[in-house]
Length: 135
Length: 294
Image 1 (cartoon, rainbow over the protein chains, first blue to last red):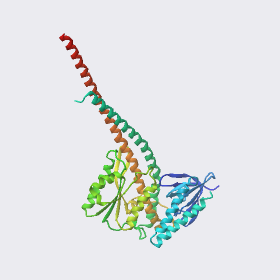
Image 2 (image 1 turned 90 degrees about the vertical axis):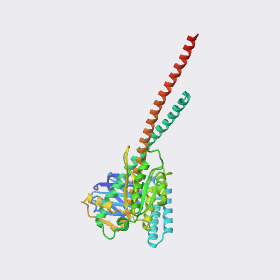
Image 3 (image 1 turned 30 degrees about the vertical axis):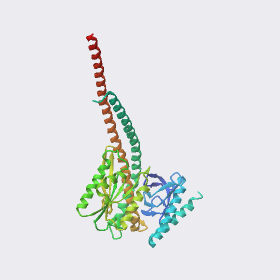
Image 4 (image 1 turned 60 degrees about the vertical axis):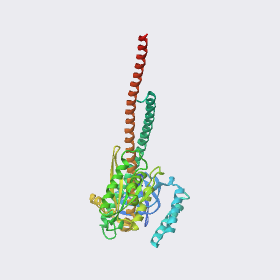
């Protein structure tokens, strides 16, 4: 059995998870990454996506996060999410609203940089929606 | 001299008021607990955020690629004040304390020949500042409809502020709110949020031993994402502290009011009883002297 480490998932409103886990899959801005114990220190932004937490007991939990940061140290991992919910509690209307907002942002963008960023965000959201729908 | 009936009515009315203030106090106490819980639940996030920010600032070392939100525009001509107050009154000196701090600040800035712009969060601060500085108020954020304060509310304000900053509408942004110390003590506080450099530099020296991080993407890019978020977090914290402070202030104000009403009822009852006794004595004297005259 893999070594356990401390994982914390924090949203501005509250501390969602704080427990010993075996591994965590984080949707990093430059690709998904699996964090295990003794990981080299990394700091990365995360994109909207699903965080899969494998607890020390082997139980798996999934959380949906909308952007944020991950602070990874050999001793533990802290995920600062702008907003995070358990995958079972996800509100589809809320997700649809976010996609709508992102679409408007993309349409309103003034310059190319802003537009490409907004479009990228929109694409991430739609992928996320696609990933969640059958679940 | 008030008649017995007047006194009776008066006592009844003070009793009714007392019931209302008592109820308000209890509602405030219940809300205070919830607000306090919310403020406590939000604490881990802002703490971790502070740590991450300190870390990354150190990595960049104030180099050229730090975003403008952090270093500022290099001027301090135009000041933006975000004044956070409550939406409702009846909470003692809570709102006026914050407004007074903001007003002193505005006066000082204006005396120095700076330009001042104000964003009011909450109705009460707006009402107070409107009297003297109506022309300086850019806009008013209404949170009256908001039942539970969410991060989205703070984020909306932060977005506005950052938008204004990017348009070059101000150089320095200060946040006014009331720090919740305890139920009976709220400290009006002014906190500079843009540029953020000074604030985080102090935090960075605090924890010297930091690991060598790998950054993904580049530190500058992370920072440009992190700083706006940090502003939203600061505003969110201010709003939560304010919510807790407002309820605390309201609770003690209503407690005072209830006690005052109790005192008043006591005084009125004594007057009422004395007057009734005087009247009985008077009537008895009349009867007795009438009987003696026969």
